[in-house]
Image (tube, rainbow, N blue to C red; front, side, top):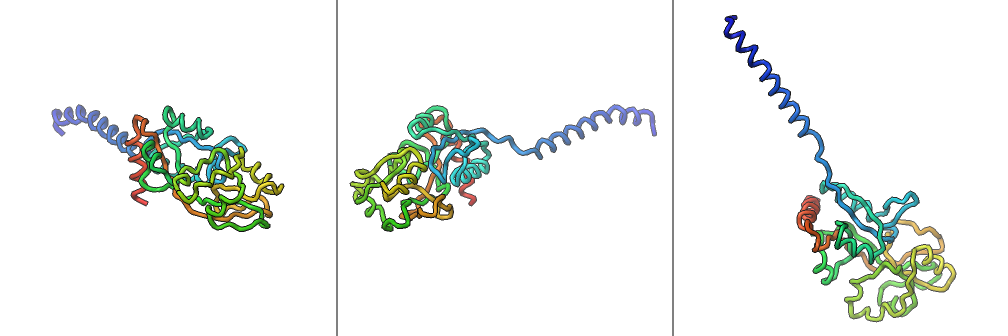
Length: 240
């Protein structure tokens, strides 16, 4: 081999090695999963869909659906518990996502709403098996009934046939109190969200389903990045 040719190879070898190392590093970096973007989600006490478990973590059927969707959209969800009033205030300031059942026109003006529901929830009453079975909300408004104070049922207020629904409502703080009052016989019905596949924790109680309703993911329209975040969610939903 000519001395000049050997000298050229000696000079070019480090450059080749450097280029190969660079290409390997690029390929390795591209093979790594993209870092998930952290986002926050506020939830309230609405078992079996949203609640805090004994370890202090968010749990429930709805939490599972939301968590899966946000992760598929490239987010790292952080679930934060708030009362409904505090949560809505936080949604306008430092919380990103939450969920709304059957959004009203007013809520659609206030929130950026996902293009499709995240999941479906069931609306009905829990009652003693010995109590009269109900088949509609129109029947319920003739009886005193329990409801969680955190549950507003805003969409029901838009229905003229349910104008008297709130008249005989008695607010309670948690599900355990509702069941206790039903079992004591003081009230016959507890209006709530439930899931037929979830067993009630007392064989004396049963659930009458009235309706199945869509639950949508929402962002405040005041959120500076609302369109971009929801577009990522909608893109995932469009592929389902």
